[in-house]
Image (cartoon, rainbow, N blue to C red; front, side, top):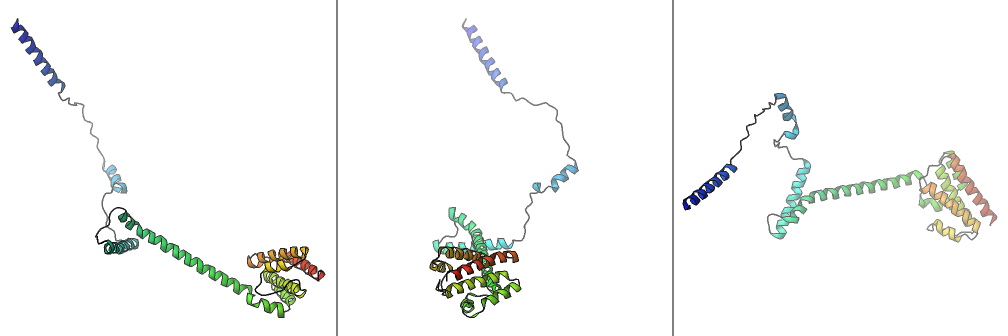
Amino acid sequence: MRRLLYSFLATFIMGTAYAQQDSIAVAYDKTPLNLRHISDDDLQKYRNDPDFNYEIVNSDPSWWDDLKTWAGNVLLRLFEAIFGVERATGLLATFLKIVPYLLLVLLVYLLIKFFLKVNASNHRQARKSGNSVLLSEEEHIIRNEDIQKLIQEAVNDKNFRLAVRYYYLHILKLLSEKELIAWELQKTNSDYLKEIKGIDLRRQFSEITHLYDYIWYGDFPIDENRYHKAENAFLNLQKSVKANA
């Protein structure tokens, strides 16, 4: 009986071991291989495609590359002199890399600012040259010139902006002669407006002042029709000034 039990156990153990060996056996794929052939034309397409070109081409550095290298070297030498180390790391290294771009932005900003300033200065100078009447001449015109004659000459020359300028000086002269304002070269048009007592007269003077500022200082283009409309406003104020005298 004991022999029979030993024989059974031996048979069971050997069968289990064989089953384990069989379960880890490698399975080979016996499916036939289907080989695909690539033609020379297909290969040439990939050769001509720059996305598949992995060759490193060494090109001459541009001026921008030279500028970045120069700026980086200057900052690196400065960094070495201050901190006594040969190489920047971390955030400082990142900062040193973007410094050339910051310098370029600053340079462009300064150039734009410079040219805008020069252009504005030239524009103001051109306006002074073209207007024919400088602020320093205002007192001379009011005190000594025949303004009505100047108005007529400007109209004959089709220089209607200048005619409006003379008309406004004529009104200031008339208000001063009638002692409705105290004309002084350093005073502003707002000062004269405060000096005028009559409500209707003050309203008319305010209207022609806005009209004058718009046409003369605003470089507003004015043709003959618009000039005559402005002239009517000046003539109406002139009548009101004489009536209030």
